[in-house]
Image (cartoon, rainbow, N blue to C red; front, side):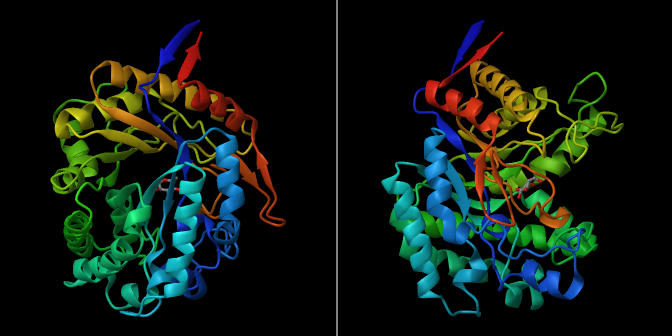
Length: 388
Ligand code: BGC
């Protein structure tokens, strides 16, 4: 047995996003495209989802019980600004209550401002390809910073821009369901600008704020598990660092999401979604990202679809061991937020992929802690990992 100690004050927790758990997001583009284009592959609709909007206290009580000292959530832009330029005070109060509750529970908040969904009016008028998109988003950010600035601990600007652009603008996965490289390029540039404006807006109001983007880092890795070489360097740049290089100029820290590496030959299908489980990939991702940007990093997502919960505990431990190794090699990593706190709406796939530490019965909304969550809870409590 050996004991892997994590740094003092390490953040332990899990994450979720508003469009995937809140329920009844009637004003966002996901809702619009569900109604008009039926884009969720199973034909399902968001409906109540995990009803987190009404049950956030119950969910955060469970997180506390599981020894989480941090959590990741997102503020749904479309709830706050249902109509362009009109900000809904009742919804602002809702998020104020959520954030105050987290403070009361002594759970540190990592708050995402853009997690894939947009108000319908925004998307239908051209969305992220519009010239004024960054300023439009920034107006929402100004409202949030003014109203809720005091209550947020860490700000996450834009979640996984590379995933959003490829799903939304290249492969018709998420709204606006496009396959247009030129528009993908335009939208990317506008996301970079929106990130920069957001960073500046927050810092203008809160001098010592901590603001960062969330990057999905998946390195191209060959059969011998090498991540360097001419082709790999090109692919890795476009898949990861094109976004990172543009956003990390304006960042106090970085959120890193890791699921699996990019492979030319995919021969391993380990999770319910057929994704490879390759823990060393998180070490590679963190070390490369640290080497390139030298920014403190927190793992903002890492998880798997595992309906039987038979692989999750080992998955978490094996990834944590690699994170520990990355810290030992000198990279500054200050937390781990598993994806996800509860089962949720897995984007265009529907509700069947089960990512949660907590099971949700979507019929009854009953919550049940999964065995893996208890194993993870012990690590959160101990601040170390025991390995054989
Ligand atoms: C996203 C999450 C999603 C997860 C699993 C990430 O790309 O940020 O919203 O649920 O991956 O697919």
